Length: 273
Length: 239
Image (tube, rainbow over the protein chains, first blue to last red):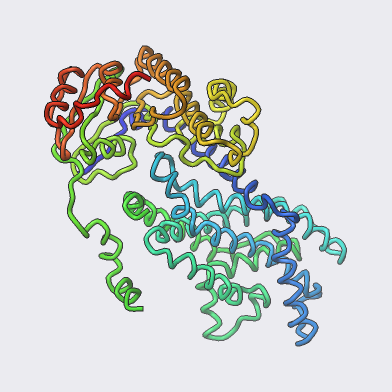
């Protein structure tokens, strides 16, 4: 019954293309702003992005490798084993945490201008991607120090895994940010869940070590096969193969759920904000 | 705890609760068509639904019932500088804001010089916006809004900003846009500016159209209905 038609836009394909480039422009500018604002006024700036995975790796190494004497599978030092998973994980975790409030914290903007709003949570993901890419040289440096040389396989594997994780994140942040407008508890819930999720993902243990009936449940974790694929790429220069399929399924599901949630809730943002 | 339980048990209802709380029609049976290049003034007492109408046209408020067709790029001037960020410079804010209002990044970059010029910010243009006075803030907001090549300009009472000199400049610019055949919808309590700028006026009252026609006649109708306004109709319009 209620319709809003913008015939100017609907009639012309050329204009739709213009609309798409404008959306990308918006994403680019918002990402740049996000990157700039994140560490403004801090002394260490970008180093904070590195500090998170590095400190986690240090603590885990102490507890698991030094105290409990657990050995990493293969011959990689435990720190590298951890870092190869913690860097992509940090991108995942920060994106979801920072994007949860991206609609609810931008009420003044959402109430005064109409624009493709999904750009807001997405810019949290892309700005964290930017930090992730910037932190790769550090990872490479550490790999090289221990005699692990990145191969040409990275040129295929890296963009591929970035793309898959980007899709999963895009869906997830749309879902979380949309519901968070109506239920602000979600912001806090997400923070708790992300800490627990870390332990349910093969980060401090390899995917291959998860066995038994209960162990199979780990494949319900969207990040399980993806994190393992990151590690295989970073440590063994292995291009992800068919074993990555669960991540692809989850990417499709996340996008579907995120889009449906956003589409059906967007109209009511105005009332809730 | 009780609230949480209720919320979870009735999640779908809970999400819609704010709508169901109280039935209120901000606008009802409003049928209106505005031609390209026309400038229309919307007047009426507080709570008549004027702003809601603009918010619906600019897609910010959902349409509960009915149909709305818009042909052209809508540029809402509902609040100047919505989304400006205090920590980054006026230039960066202007760029992002122009893209938010509908330009591409390339177009927005080309307009930056004009925007800087119009806003009269001088060296402050490259300073973080937290250093701005409220007047400077508004000047930049207006400068961006009128430089995004609007096809349909929605103005909601924002012209009562800045000093007299800047207000004149704003009105001059709007007049220029009008001559360029930009469609203008003006919501205001400043009845003189309606008489001066608009080809047509619409009087809203309690969400319905109470009168429509020549600005002078509709303004007179409004004043005679709500004669408390007739005491000081000229006090604001001379700026």
